Length: 230
Figure 1 (tube, one colour):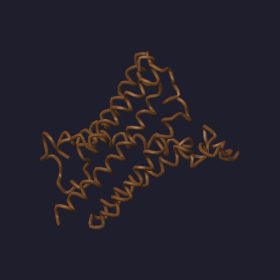
Figure 2 (cartoon, rainbow, N blue to C red):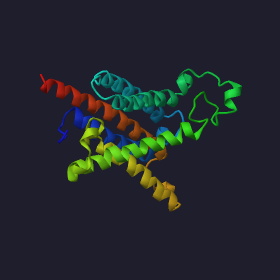
Figure 3 (cartoon, rainbow, N blue to C red):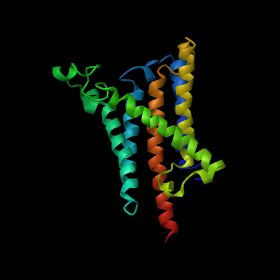
């Protein structure tokens, strides 16, 4: 996707990430509803789960179209698809936040928030996957598009089918911006200067949206290629 037009791509790749940031700032700073991102059962928590389910569905559809791809590529895509489903279930504690069942006593001793999920039981199931995804968004969403534009010779063509489209740039940039700005305000001892109450939750939205866009744009690419090949 060389240029973003006022189309589905423009709405999903440009308008949605920008609108989410603007909405977060307006709701929390102007309206004073700090629970938008700050509360465990706030709206953003459920939006995160929804985006992850969307990423899983779109990714699964795309995966069915990759039968002719090398095995390692299909495995790479599958990691992202399964990861999206894992994150979706984790965000709603596998339904506990919707249906409100009681956490078993034995699991509550392991889970630091007394919920029936895995990410609150170990950093290896929470912070580590998130860090990997964050690094992936920087590499795939910023570095690869930059190289594609200014130094394409540095991008091995054998990996081209897994490179993200340029459409993920804005989402990846917002993810990095939220992370850096939050870090600066905390380092200065002025967290109140940060425009969003809980930046980590906002960043997660962008990371999940990055995964959704990755698979959605891949779907578009493979569909267009199939049409052109007829």
